[in-house]
Amino acid sequence: MTPDRKLHLSDLLDPLLESDLLLEEDQLALRDAATVSSQAVHPLVWLSDRHMISAQGELLTLEHLTRWMAAYYSIDYFQIDPLKMDVDSVTRELSSSYTAGYRILPVATDLESVTFATAEPFERQWESEMAHVLRREVHRVIANPTDILRYQEELFGVSHSIRKAEQMSDQDPLGLNNLEALVELGRSGQLDANDRHIVTIVDWLLQYAFEQRASDIHLEPRREQGHVRFRIDGLMHSVYDVPAVIVTAITARIKALARMDVVEKRRPQDGRLKTKTPKGEEIELRLSTMPTAFGEKLVMRIFDPQVLMRDLSELGFSKHDADVWQEMTGASHGIVLLTGPTGSGKTTTLYSTLRNIAQPEVNVCTVEDPIEMIDPALNQMQVNHRIDLDFSSGIKTLMRQDPDVIMVGEIRDLETAEMAIQAALTGHMVLSTLHTNDAPSAILRLMDIGVPSYLINATLLGVMGQRLVRTLCPHCKTPSAVNGSAWADLTAPWKLSLPKQLYQANGCERCRQSGYAGRIGIYESLQLSNGMRELVQPDCDLAVLRKQALKEGMEPLRIAGVRKVMAGQTTIEEVLRVAPV
Image (cartoon, rainbow, N blue to C red; front, side, top):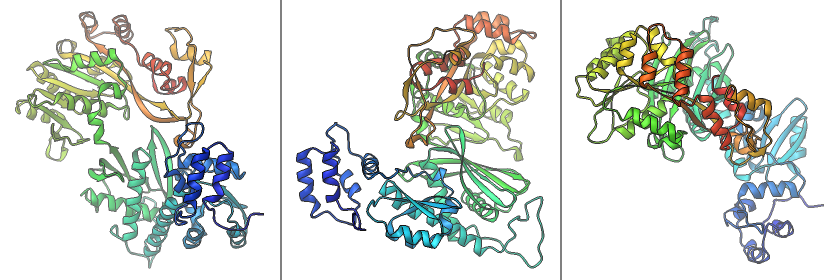
């Protein structure tokens, strides 16, 4: 039986050679180094830092070595993902100093057992001690040693800060802004948003969101507990449940950083914040608050300035759609619309397009509500209803600024539409967005808000509809047989022939078992040809417009999605979920 001790580099060399992961000459060199290797560094980390190639030609990464060690010693492997852990329950009953001493991390708990992650296969003493203290069964799993150390510090640190902040506040958890507020005599006070524990929590929250590729952060107050959730690749993920009073303090801290009115909690507010990722990259956050039954909800939308530098192919445009889009947006005057629901990537497409248009010889001006991302190449103005600066008055102002291109954040009403049309008729290029299901619907939407058909024919150059679909994780996607019924659902009524092979989402640790990582756009481009303009009449029918657009070569969103499926970028199920019929 192996004595209770820490793992040494020499323990791994023969097993690695036996498993055909090490070449014999590499093993001899490492054996000499094993005598002088520092025990301050875990042997797996030390080995991965050598950047060696296995006998099969694979790079021996830390993840690869950790999985191998777990399999070799017949211990379950565990990928640490805080988004799937109940952080409060696994850290509440344990001493961070004790777990840090043994470099173990609690990763799961229930009424009967607690599971700990370790990178030491021979160290067992702590198991009996933990079982005695917790009075539950103790299970152990092997995990990446770097992850254990990192989350040991982060998770225990955040939990400690939350509990300390909670202890420092004697305010009623329901809060005065809760519609169900219960007044208890003798209780008063306010948790300071600048308290160091709150500062720690906010810093961790932002950095963790950047690392997890979140597009939005939601802070949601509830009756007793507040929820922290991230939107990742279009889907919501629960991150942490914290006491309601802590959510209030976190919201106040973030509002203060964004120079918003911290005291005002009865009406919605908008703000913005610029910060940096752990890698030093600048990130823009757009903030929005909303009063709810249980307090003030805060949503932060995260914008990566790097999207301004993406070309159309990186956004997902096919060559045909890219050519049509560049032709429409390259015109000297007229209106081009981008349509799709909230969160469909319209902002990214618009900013990438404007960044390419904004050359030194071109004056690009925008009126937005609010300004999503600030770019020095653009002249950007923000709507301010308190001083009667809305979209229509903003366009009127921009027309006196000698613009070449005007971007209007959204056409919401007739007054804004009329000013956009006036700008187009006077020789300006106007880009804007509408909320419609597809490109042909934009024409009827303009008529619904009161724009005469003859003005649409005179100014509208075209419409681009778009959606975002999740892309398959490159690390775990595998070829699959084609599901005939699903393929028929996707391609109806076009009845395309079955492809020989598609790919399926499987799920791995890198994509949190979802099978997807990242998103890409699918597009449908509608140009107003002479044939289309003849159909744009006061009594025109959407079905007729769509039929004519398809006849003239418009590829609908479903077909754009089919191309992504056949290219192995996404799945039939994902396109069916996102793209309208």
